[in-house]
Image 1 (cartoon, rainbow, N blue to C red):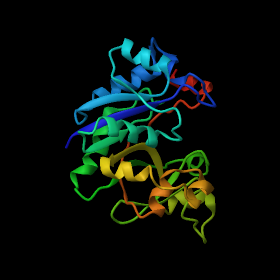
Image 2: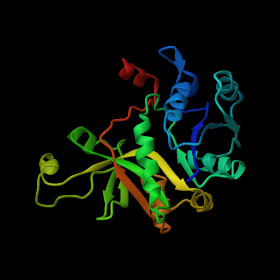
Image 3: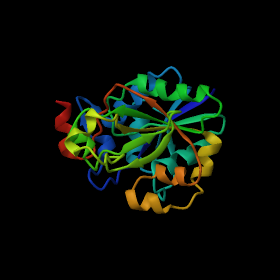
Length: 241
């Protein structure tokens, strides 16, 4: 399999403008993500996909590969699709979040391994939820799985609802998983996904992956025990200390 790792990066973040270029212990966030991704043996290439000249010049400056993409993309998925239309020799594309400066390459390898099964269309990672804060935090998407470790549904609320058990005891009676936001796609599937209209469930939950499920695509999951730390807003930088 030929696998490309793509790091979508935009400058105009609502909550944290210029986030890819923020300095973290002497290196920019985007450089740290790039260098971590480059350690994953399964990736034949790592690229930053951006529409911003400042980010592009910075990536060039530290020796990374960058591809300029359109400024009209609504999601990182769309930006990744433009990259594979340009770099069209790959079988699998892995969408790596540009705001996780210390992503573990082992997570990329775990995701890539899902495609050893030729029937895998899309893959992502999940992690067991161990705290009630995470379980009931609507900023932490949860995942329901079937017996084949495929996603049935993603939600910001805790699912399933346990009818006869008090919510403060739910973790003692059911294994809940949160979604780790890294995706892999077969390239032909990724191209098809970008042509799908926004769906009703996607609008309701503000979760893009529901569009794919509503249209019959299957999302394979792999369970990781590794935690990820995303920088969504300036205050999150304090977590790195």
